Image: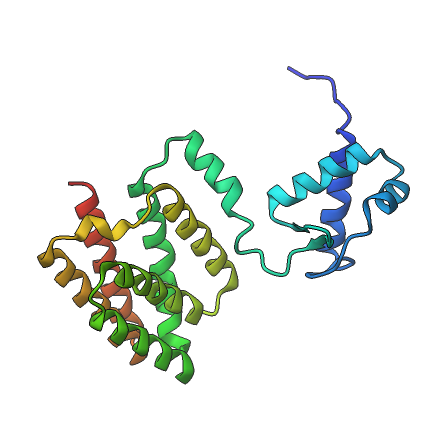
Length: 229
């Protein structure tokens, strides 16, 4: 039943200490870590252990290694989730359907928050993106504006952690699926998609959370229904 307790590897102990220092505020976003030679002296471990620890912190998305500049605590963590998520997604044969269902959950919550607190500036930006999307003729431009439209709503939600998850899922979708709009290249489907975006925009800019949620739910139900066919 019980197994012998093994000591943690040295590099894991270094990782634990740095994580603790981030959590208790001794290391803050943007702080530069001491040089590799200094870290070996501070932790009294080998350079190999330090390198393994830094690599582990990179994978966790906590540390950013700048070529020739040193190692820094990340200022922005919204890209740090991508690498571990992409590995899990690949190992478990993740599908487009799974990604869209996760996006549906995230974006329904985001659009509700956005409708309740969107600023005048954000309202103007969202409307501008919507008009550009409606006027765009090239599918490449439409795809970019579609992505920006959803990003603007996520940004207006004001929830940083929600944005981090959304960015990781969106990056995953781009990496493994590419342009998801290709599913809707038929004119009638594109027309429906455009109208759904318009409904979402109108509800958000007018500050109506319930209609915004209903429109976003309708949007993703439509997308998911077409994926399953």
